[in-house]
Length: 398
Image 1 (cartoon, helix red, strand yellow):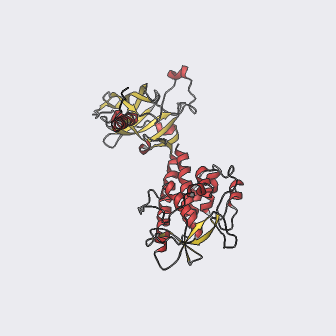
Image 2 (cartoon, helix red, strand yellow):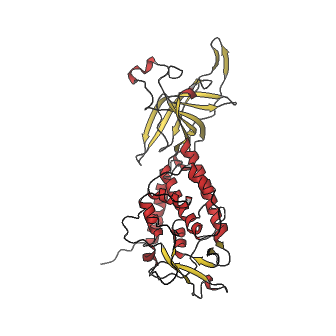
Image 3 (spheres, helix red, strand yellow):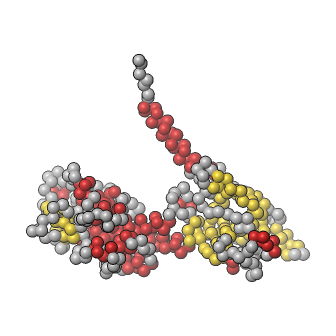
């Protein structure tokens, strides 16, 4: 019986093309690539704080001091499909009036849900014009995500006091479109995230400036001011989690030692793996105390220079040698489990991370005021804090 041959290379190519096309169709930008986005200030009805009964909506004015309707302002929202507008103003017996303008626009999936009665403003000749949403048509995509087609009409030639009815302020973060992060974010959260990201960049730059050793092309600290110390487990933690991604100083982080075949198993028993898994409860023994051993691998850069370089080893702790802890004298697992803060702002970030607490502006100020220098506390504290902060930001935006 003749066998049937399959061209696997061709199949992989077709599968790749199919996956790429699906990814392209899943991207909300793709469907609007021929439509220009228009930035506006959007006023989305807040259903929880609006006291209007739908049955008697017609009896109330939407805007004004007696209106029961409340809005969330979404700054810099993007609507797609709005064409060029020509607004002609005429002075009539009723004051300044504009020609009737109406049209349709689209709101991307996974951004926000519009309602009839919403408003948005567009500046025209340095003057805001207020448009009212008259109809909303949700269209469900094959991904089960809702895209909205809205119809609008020019309602007022000024803001008409709508700002007085705003009860929540949000920011439209277009860089999150197509990701798992929120696109519409509360303003205070958005501002805090921006501060955190600035702090993260500084921490990454500080770590590079203080600990990167050009000779051996990796990160070293001076233990007790004299011993060149290297931790392959910390380096592995940094590699796995792209800890220095986004730094203004690009550096390729790699191991400068040949690692044993059991390194992956040994790594899973260290504090670094616990931090990744956010788990200090289910692991029976967590290694964060080790010994510094001199590197004798002749093909390693750590062996290539007259001065000795030492590496950290957590396996088979030798109590006859001076034991070294990642956390100094602190019993950190106890601090984490009992949510006890320390005098070190970086360790406090880690403790907050494990206990699902949020970062505050005070935390960032404490980090700013650290005396940055070459020591073991910062060698471990900075990369761990960077990882924890990035995880906490992802949770804030998820």
